[in-house]
Length: 515
Image (cartoon, rainbow, N blue to C red):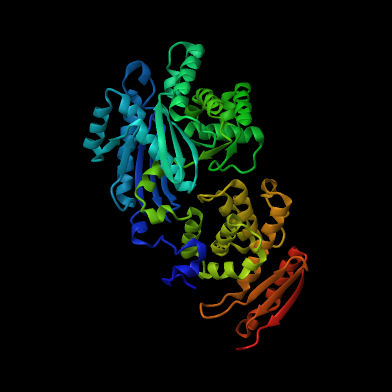
């Protein structure tokens, strides 16, 4: 009941939680500094290692790679700002990280003639050694970041930085072929020859990349700040209701429409509406030229934005195999339950109690049901008037890996119904449009089933009872053990009838005979 048993079989297909495993605990409060061509960022990971939370996340737009094509050296102003940022990051890390920071530098530092001098300055002033990685290693780490968020993914990872763009194929949880190029927007902005020369350079480079990578017609994963900025603009153009970048989907047609939208709008007004920085917005037109070319050559069947990249890939690198194979969603939900629920472990009992209502659900849907049961009580500290909204917000906006946007809304709607019968009149109604009518009804049933099941809290030695659902006869049967009859009071009965109403069912309640 409390998750302390060693028997992994009782956890079903999800396996025993691993966030308390020694190897997983070693990955808490891990700090990473990413010295990119455009920005320098510190991320400190914490929480469930397989689906880490961002305990600390700070970015400085230094533009180290600005002017690199012309001078061959790092941008002097950017160099000073980067060094100041790293001094700050090292000071912060001493207070909040359990181990030493890991720092990597990418295209700008590896290509600049004064890159080694910059790394020496960082080491002398902060004691932090900067590991300068080559393009193929950058591609591999970015691809591993995608695998952290999407276990079992397959397709082509496209990571764009300020001075470079990398491609890597992923399949069967492995990174395959990978290549690097100088198609970063900072490089393209400084390229001689104007628009015509830039277009020729982009086309020639992409043709070479296509020849090196071969046929890649699966999903295209977009990693990098410029791609995320384009996704924000695409959301604004479409009026898309869920402003979560991770797992946001676009099509080739949408990318062309967004490129036109950027040309037709004032850049300053557009960036303010979309929440894009001025320095990033200046690079968007160059990034769009590259993205249109990538899509035209590789013809992916699907395009997904990944918020996970090189920094998450560095964390994934340190994970043991048994942790990598875990579902990031389930591990994160278990961690939240263990940390925040009033009765940790009850989510598992609740899952098995309500599962008969979803016998026809496939494994993907059961996975979301399991997540909902684990999260059903983590927001109990919120004011009762706002618990439903707090739950919905958490499900739709929290850092949860392995969730499509429609899954987020389904999960959020189920948790909303865990605390209230009606979904009308909330500020989330626009998001319901991401689900079809059948999914909305199923989320309501799930939420009301959890709402009823939560009334039957018991300890590990007791039986909650059993639900049996006959969908053709529209009959919902509840069998309670005598030990639980006292829990079936007026409020519990009202919630059971509300569940039956959501199912369009007649009810029957029986008391099990004592054996």
